[in-house]
Image (cartoon, rainbow, N blue to C red):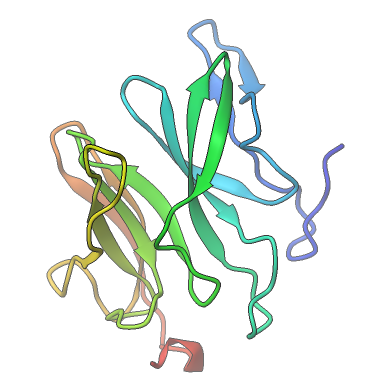
Length: 173
C-alpha cells in the first residue's frame, strides 16, 4: 500500500533498481520503510549502499530531519541497516555520495558551524568500516546558501546543487 505524506500529499519515496533488461523493481530487503528513502550511493561492487531516510520522530523543534544509513547486500537482500554515527536529531545529514576510490563519503548537513543553510562535508571511511573526523569543505565550496546533492563523477569532479535564498531565522546560528 502506498501511503501519502502529510507534508505534500505525495507518495513516500522509496528506492528502486533498473536492470539491464529495462525492468524497474523496488530494491529487496529492509531499506524501504514507511518513511522517505532517497539519494542512494552504491559501492562499485554493489554490496554497500549509503542512503538518506527521514528520521522516525520529530526533534524538540517539531522537525522531522534527515539521516544517512548504510546497508549491505547479502543473500539477495539489503540487510544490516545501520545509522551512521555522525547523524543527530538536532540537524540534518543527507545526500551521500562516494569518492572514486570509495575512501571518502561526501554529504550535506546543516549541523552547527555550517557556513550557510547547509554545507557539503566529507568523512574518511576507514579500512575497518569506521569513519574519521568530519570535514567541512570550507568557503571554496560552501556559501551562505544551501549546498545539496553532491555527486562525484568517474574522473573525481565534485558536482552539487546550490540553492541561494535569503537566510531564514533557522539558518542563523
